Amino acid sequence: GGNDTLNLATGSNIVGVTNLGGGTDTINLSGTVGTKTGQQTVRDFIRGGELLNVNSGYWTLNKAVDASQLTVASGATLEVDGTNGNDGYIEGLAGVPVINGKLVINGDAFPRPAGVYDSAFGLTGSGAVDIQGGARVHFGDSALTGLTTITNGELLVTGAIAGGVNVTSGSTLHIGANLGAPDVDGYRTISAGGGSTGAVGGNIANSGTTIF
Image (tube, rainbow, N blue to C red; front, side, top):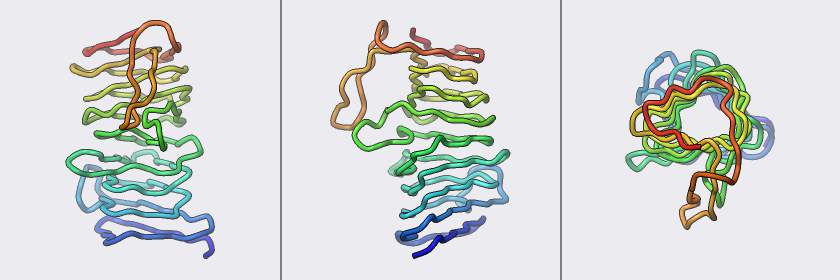
């Protein structure tokens, strides 16, 4: 079909797989609640999307959503949830995600490309990132100027990132690393020293572990 738009608001509930078909299709998430709520949760697959816009509210993905471009507006939050049996992620990202609000990566890798889940990626915008639930995230070059907080997880930096990093107790920041071949689950072994280099443009607040 043509260019379709799917608008989800607070209380929207999709049952079963949604397929938007061909064309350039847009998914708009607009909510009135600024904290995590079941009223702003995508519980099933959305296929065939190209543009995913999180316009307002705190939205959670419990299943995969297809999108080649992600934009999170100022004041809005998107959580990709891979905990407690959920499998939330964005499939097919090609452009650099624009994060002016907050991106919460909970319990899984992001953006999770086929084969190597912890491939390097970058973000842009003035927003923030929160890594939770034991997730592993790998930044290459990233122009995001806001703070990345590792609440419970692991961050690899093998490029230059503009913002600062807050490493909380029990979490780990790797700045440069030797990366091995991916295992059967798509994750690579990490060893410190040599290998790639990384740079953090902002401040590092370290209450956990930082490895160079």
